[in-house]
Length: 368
Image (cartoon, rainbow, N blue to C red; front, side, top):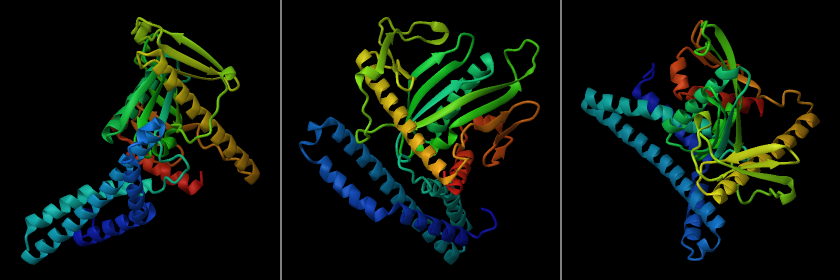
């Protein structure tokens, strides 16, 4: 357990958890919990379904947050008892048990510490992630699909629910684009640092001469829109097209024209949804995606104006943000933070915690 004694490790973790509890303000959370429980018990709550859904969702998240902090506090207290008991009885097995528990607690508390840095207006929200194949032809389409798997595995590792709304498949292999939702507390704040261009260098499996190719995939992350957001869209600003859902190679996966594509004419933003059998449901989901994109566009425009007023020429920290080199050597490196690893297979299997934590800390320092 590093060079620290179990007692020193325990003291450090206890201090770290106290700092997290202070930032989170657990007393305020408990007061919010009581208020939400009172709202949830109102027999008229479901008269307004949007309000009811927002209330119950927030209630579940506050309960989970308090439960996590309470559980960590209890586990630290139990570890302290074990350490004291081991010292009194000179019991190496009890001390080993305590050390094992502290080793388990360290990454959990580290992750919560990073999350306390997420204080942006929308950071607590669910996220909408769009991945697009960029330069690189069929390799780029294949790379976009690899990036999709990487993020789905990352979410799976964290127990985060995901839902794919729309996938546009490429002809030969891979995908042109995909949009999916990540439904978890702080999903937007956490994944927003992944926005930008991801660059892959490898021997192309699609090149008969086995030459090295460079391909690019773009990642966009926006916060999910909520009922309280002031996003009004006149019907005249929309063009709605319906079509039949398709799978890889253009294969039809639905016998009805249930998929919906919406174009926002003033901005030319195009969104689509094909995951539901009902055209009505797909339209509602596509509208929610469009509102989220417009909300993010408005936020970026406001930030750009502030950057201009401050004379900040480095306002856009996106663009190329990470390189994945599989040949002639193995390396994943974040061009913003300098974070790197030679274990490329682990990263592509969703082991992104160190990269995301470093990027969140970097962004905080940048004031971005």
